[in-house]
Length: 172
Image (cartoon, rainbow, N blue to C red; front, side, top):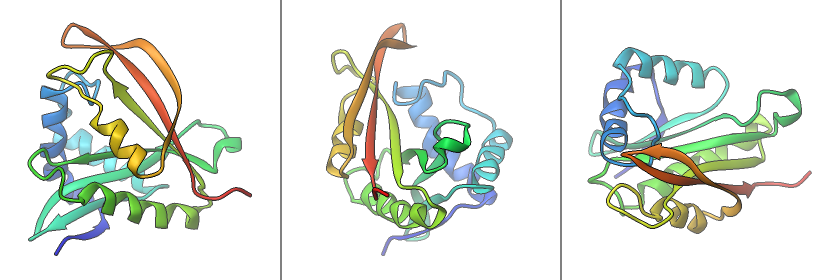
């Protein structure tokens, strides 16, 4: 049975394995080079200083992860965060993403965070590097599209759009 828990820096190798696929084979991430394991450990550690970083395990293996991060670095935005999620390419469609986001959404209000934002690569026309599955997933999770930037990302010699999606957990 799958379970969600907080990530540790010791998870970095497996998290990087999941992420590397998206860097090397897709336009989901606009990074061109896979970061080092040390860099990924630092990313996990830095995130955990202020925000949740969650993993989902199934049969003892990490199948995906999600985390929150700074939306804008001003105190006025402290109620807001950017969220990111990655599921192992061979484990997609098994409900792990929904379990991760639901767990994240339980943790964030405890930190006073109510506004969630996802920055998503979006194809002008779906291709072998990028489809609209992230946008559709976020929509199923209750996010709505609030903005679109045209041709702002370049990967594999192609231009991609970026969309912002928003979910408000509570209005104060």
